[in-house]
Each structure stands twice: as C-alpha cells, then as structure tokens.
Length: 76
Image 1: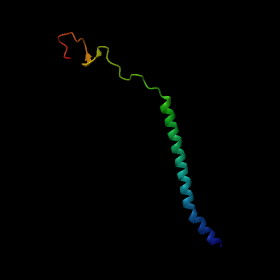
Image 2 (image 1 turned 90 degrees about the vertical axis):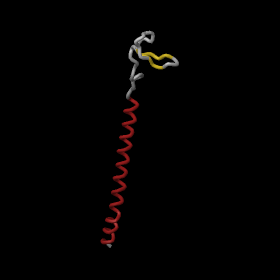
Image 3 (image 1 turned 180 degrees about the horizontal axis):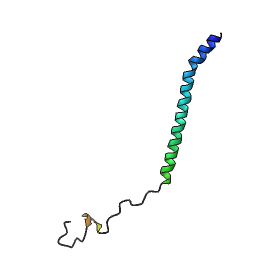
Image 4 (image 1 turned 135 degrees about the vertical axis):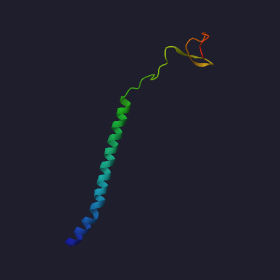
C-alpha cells in the first residue's frame, strides 16, 4: 500500500511542479506588461520632435523651401 502511494505521488509531482512554474511565469509576464504600459503612458512625448529650421517654410503647390525664393542663387 505504501509503495502505491509513493508511486502515485512521484507520478503527480512533475505535472504539479510544471503547472506551478507556468503560473508563476504568467504572473511575472503580466506584471512586466502592466509596468511597461504604465511607463509608456507616463512618458510625455514632445509635440513636434523635429521642428523646421528657421529658414525653411512650406509653399502651397511647391513644397518645403529653404531660404529666400526671390534670390536668384536659390536652388529651389
């Protein structure tokens, strides 16, 4: 009888340990995901990360221009 109980316990030990390890890994993944979501929402992104240089402007139908368009040396 005692041998049967030992065999039964030894047979169930690996699946129980596997389920326990998977449960812990899932909890840790959820914690990491929650922390990364909170970190990304807490960070404030700049409104315009690449502002135009002061001498660059947009002309409708032409596009972005740099410098003075009336200058004869402007490459446009």
